[in-house]
Image 1 (cartoon, rainbow, N blue to C red):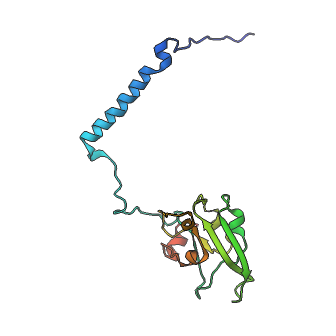
Image 2: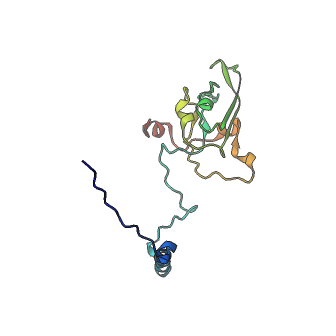
Image 3: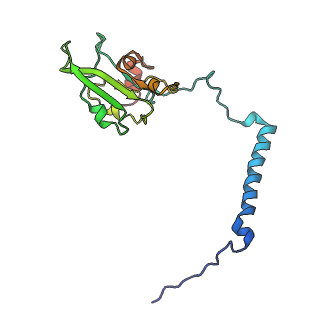
Length: 174
């Protein structure tokens, strides 16, 4: 019982077909057709008027990081290194020190996040056992002139406010 083999003729054997000139001209005709149509009537173009009109950001959108505090303004972070261990980009650097306020055994002395290395996956937020780190600032545009300006330290992370209320954050999906 032999298998039947069907031979299919290969196209593109002539010089013009091998150079793809016809296909290049078809593609350029489509591109220039769109260009002239958009230049003649630009009312159908979708334009975002940023920064005058800010985009709507959902509650669970992952923006820039922040550290949360207790009601008495002490840092919630217990320097357990779970966020640093769980980070696939290795952009979180923590240095632990002794805590003197009685909330836990240790606290971060240094807590740096390199935003140029961060992939904004949110694994650090999910790994945190005390809800100390969040990505709910609503900051979606991070700019700077020097590499050092993209490394967030402990003070900057603590002073960054959340963009949503606690009720909105909890209701938003967790």
